[in-house]
Image 1 (tube, rainbow, N blue to C red):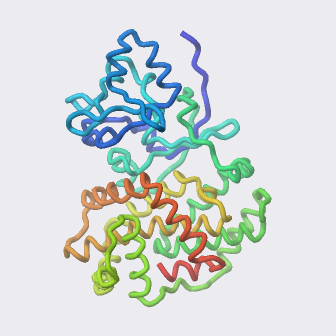
Image 2: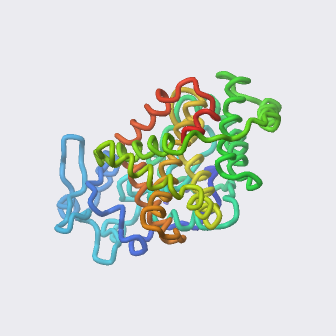
Image 3: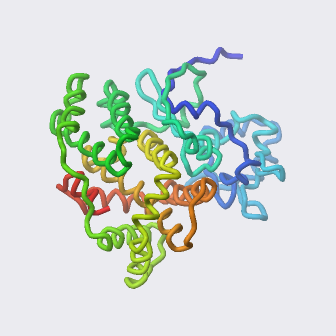
Length: 375
């Protein structure tokens, strides 16, 4: 057996406790999806002696090979025990890249890998979000996972890779500053990005520059204000309508906004008071997972707005559920709702492109404070 090489992985500490368990999540990855089979994985499957039996579970489509649906709509490799027949019989090395990696998201830099878990996986979400302690990050040297299952970082991130971890650590520290309400932490993060963009432009910062950017935030005492409630909530409700393709008429959008507006302060205070750690952990995980401030083009300002928009949609959905049903959101309800919300945000290319356009165009030239006032 060939000696396996090692790599340095920087990740949230919770990731080392995760393992895929189809029985625990109802095999969510395998239900209702036509799972693409990459060329290298198909070639590996060609080497199995029971080739005909394996390829009976696959079909060729215009875009390449994919798994067939079984009678119940699930992947035809899914066994009655909620586990994968392919993995059980031949080992995980024969899984397609997408099955091998998900819910892991890995970015491969020069000499190290950054890895996290997508919160659209309910098992991952439970171990990542419920801890009342701030999310920790650490580096470990581990055996190399399948390289082809990694994501290539954006060119902007590669150009800044010598400073990217420092930027991430500084940014996450703003999101975990529990002396401030979460909304104010977002404002402080946005102000940090503005300072970074102003001081560095396209030049990767050194430690002294990052310290100066932090000092800029501390010196800026601009209060965190919010626009008129119905204006804010009407806008977020319209975002939700587009993402879920609900095609609500204007009066329905107005009703959703009004539902939250009447109880917003009390419901928001209760949600953040009881479960602020879940919201904080969600924000921190999403920030690291999406590789902000390099998740999209348009500079740090656009990246911040995209990050805040995605988070606000998740938060608004929770507020709306609590207000509409007149219930207190406990841990299980929140995780169940976030599961559905993040699945939509993670797996809908149309939703992702829509939010990127909003971040780049709707608030062009607006400061982080002015932008957050409208959310």
